[in-house]
Image 1 (spheres, chains in turn yellow, brown):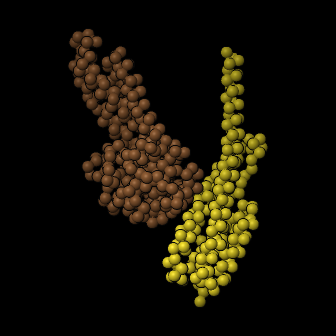
Image 2: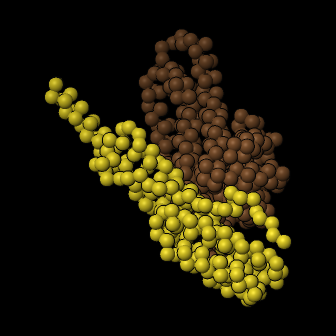
Image 3: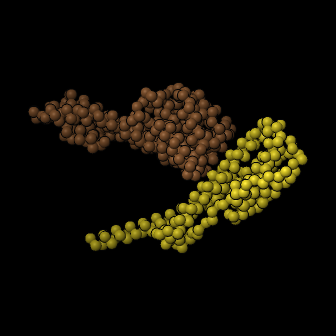
Length: 183
Length: 273
């Protein structure tokens, strides 16, 4: 009888250890997957840009400063790898694209072109996808970081070899500051 | 509910012990089948047509957005050719999910509103509401079948088994219980459906963090008085807005909470975010 009890307790303990270990690994993998999703969406947006710039150029060739900004931001975004760099480049590109779309507003012919409309819709959905992928990533990072810091899973951090991950925080100047008015 | 059913059964002693498993088994098999093939079944019942991405890239973009926000796999997307704005989700698990929209809803709603609707439907998928309603339907079905069987037994075979002089009061009580049980089961089913609708609204906001879109969408649905043409009772609970005429269905039996209440809840959420 005693042997059975000891065996039972041991079995429960082993199951508990396994579940805690697996929980950390699962959370860590979820963060990796969410990050991969962000990269996929950023890549897709980046692929859209040359086409968009060409289309706008066809109607508004002299707005070269705006195009330059977008091209530069795109180049910065493609070369970034670490989480904060990617986030910063992403924020810059979002802003540059907003500038481009604002320019397009001044050209009724451009706004009416079917090509531009479909590109605009594609860009809108990609921007949403980027921000949802970011939100999903941050949710996963939060779950992992909480598990790493709280008992009992915190005891297994060294064993599972997981570390706290960085949040994806986009600096969006347009959301922080009031827009500057220029005359 | 089960206690009530069991009480009715135990009154009949031995014979009830046979009836119960039969009733439950029968309800289980029929509902399990409709749950397992829910996507195909509902497509047939509503006349929905499954879309390819090239046919409506905008709608697919919206669904992909919500998939990214929720981490769910991409469902099948379908349209129902119907002017009434409405939408539904079905499928036995997220891997076999199907969400459908009427052509009416695609025409009247803008991007944000549609996103709210897509999120609501994907919330049903995430919360596994097809399973929940299948379990509710099994329970309700088993009780209905059970009470039906017991009624027949009472009229025909029942009396022979017992010694004479059975209590007439008990007989009346058991009769009442048998009559009430299916009604109670239907109430339960409707109550569960209403709860799941509210939950889906909340989950949708969790996905998009944008209660305004869904609230505006519900306001459009509330203003719209056209109803889905083939309004079968059997599939009423799966639509985002109840396809049945609100006045003819009493509140207790309604599969959806009043749309004004849902709008008010979303408004409160907008205040908090």
